Structures are given as structure tokens and as C-alpha cells.
Length: 165
Image (spheres, rainbow, N blue to C red):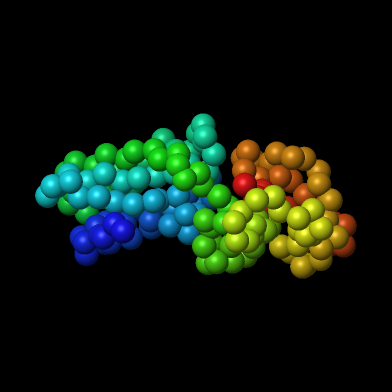
């Protein structure tokens, strides 16, 4: 079991408070991509960051934003490392993050449940505007590769759906 110091917990909180560059309604903590912070020695910190998918173009911006925030808090040397294992999953999005996505008009991903695995196709995607489960897929990709474009057949409003991974 890895123990963290109060300083590491505070730095983790600061790193996690950075808004996601593609979904600024969410913080990196709510998205579940900041995996840990280690103080190597006073003034030297390593932050572990897991992208939502390998090759995610936002990882560079996330890293730069984390470095800026931690340096602004008085840490002179910050290194952000990409950690691919364990892989990020949409189950890593916090309940608050899911609530914010829906409030922002993006259907949150459906939870995969214990053990992960495929999501049942019988689960409908709820419209974030009217709550109907009568929705249709318009495009497998939307403004980012993590989202699909859907339309509600009840209220006719288009919306993004954060895809399950």
C-alpha cells in the first residue's frame, strides 16, 4: 500500500483541480486521469497522468496546465509522466463528473459495473435535455474521439454522448 504525505495530498488536489482542456466543465480529478503525485525531494514533484485513450492529443495540454498550477503554488520542478497501466476507463469518472456532464448537455457514459467488461446493449442512452431514452446515433464521433453525436427522438435535440471505454 502506498502512503501519501499531506503535502502530496495537497499537490494531488491542486493537480486534480485543473480543468480538462476538451471538457472544461470537468476537472482532471473528476475525469479520473490524475493517478498520483510523488514528492521526490523538496521542490521536485512527479505527477502521474493517464490519458483517456492512447494518443489523446489533450495529454500535452493537461501536462502543461498541471505544471503551471503546481509551479504557481511554489514547486520549482514538476515532471508529468504518462501512465498507461492500468488503463483509464469511463468508470474512473466521478459521480460529480457524471452529474456535471449531464448538466452541461453531454450524456455521461454508462457505468460498466464490477469487473468492467462490455456494457449491455440493452441499456439506453438518456437524453440530457429531456430525459428520454428514445435516442439515435447520428455519428460515432463528435467534437472529440471520446464522444459520439446522438439525437433525442422525443425532443429532437442533438447531444454528445461520452462513450464508454
